[in-house]
Image 1 (cartoon, rainbow, N blue to C red):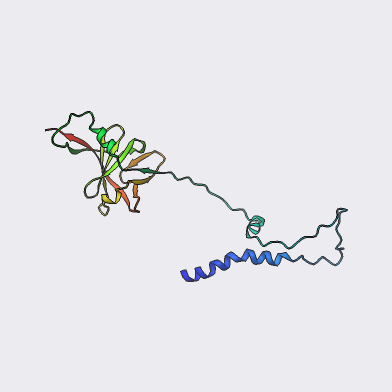
Image 2: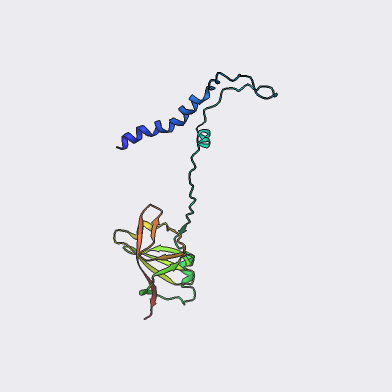
Length: 190
């Protein structure tokens, strides 16, 4: 079926060209009319007309409807070392790195509040927010976090939120994954 369409499509595109080529010759004048010009202006001799498919489309009497859609795609880049260090800047230096625990469920998150992303283990990403919070994002089971090493793209919705079970993240390598869970990471003391 596809091969028939591939063969017929160029022929369909050439139809306006053939129709205009037939239209190039002047139609014969009716028997009762003279072929002299009707006005006193001198007759301008027409040269050969170019065959232009766009002119044929403009002259067609059917009106087509045009829909203009706007898509906004937002890129979230990997968190730089400065962003990660600034989250811990107020803390005194320690021998052991801090441990984090997932707490509370988040349903949606404002896209404007995301400062960066870092890959986690398995199918988890860590989002760094501008208000110094960290959010763990669980992707669907078939996805791997390491596909998102260079950040991700997300289509902006009307509400400007990144939500669980609604939005899909697209990695720069082409993987598309839906967000299944979102939890806040809180430092565990002691």
